[in-house]
Image 1 (cartoon, rainbow, N blue to C red):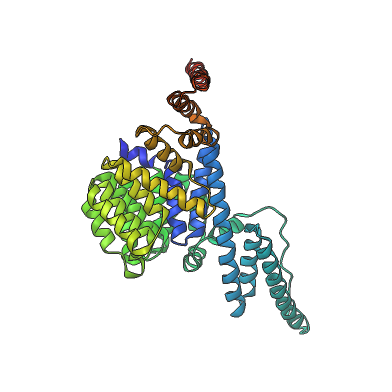
Image 2: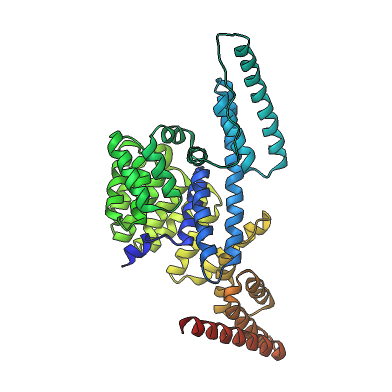
Length: 421
């Protein structure tokens, strides 16, 4: 069933989309984890998509830099209120995350200042014979479960991080298991933590629901998330997961009601707009979705995720010229900002142009670039390059690329037969 296919293990594409939404909302740690999970899935897949791996690596690097900046600011706040140990841990985490030389210099200075204050406090303690002080044990380079747990929590928003650190041993074991892909163990320990602590008002149901989804228990996950939102209506990831559940169930009225209940401070955020538009799209209300996405761009300005959703909606309405122009506009924005164009956007524009009979050198060059960026589809691109060369009268190149495409298809077919036998 499609329902169980969805939650038997999210696809790399879905994990990346979740990471994008979480990053947009400022949940950099959670976004990093989703991107890393997507990267692991891509790496393990047969016929690795090098372009997708590169894109995910760039996103992981971006979240690490954002996290490092967040830890820098939080560390400064903690030091200002006298919590030097916690401040130093955040600064150390930031140094481990960042590759930015300027930020490393700033963090190193911040670390020296905090260490100087701590050293002064220690000297003051040692000057009193009645006070005993023992130096902290140096790290031996092997990360203990406690250290791994604190590192994971360090990627979370500050209020959530503080809550997680106080949930006890069962939660810690379950949370570590969840992040290691040990879902049965995670569900057992997280359920025990929820029951033992009687923590109905905690964030534990969010993590337990995540484990349940991985174990094909969507109904249990739904109940946990709905209960969580009664106590924590500002938990954005819960809305995102619940919407996906409702879409799969075809319960679009419930998705609408859920999104209407979102607190004002979240209701105007980009991830919520994306969820509202996607709910319209999933329900098949393509005309309404088109108006929704257009109104967003007219009111709030350019956003690539909204523009891509609008282009996809044009395709659903068979408005291919509008879709092609929208993909072209996305490419133009990326080029003007010196950002790398998503190959999927490039492919959409090239295919829609090709289907519209635009067989010119600009489209030919796009397909040649795509063959390098997405080599797993190179035979398809080369076949279209051959057809474009034929349409512009270069029969020699047309035959060369058509033969190359056929050769690649034949090789792929023989490899497939080998694996099947």
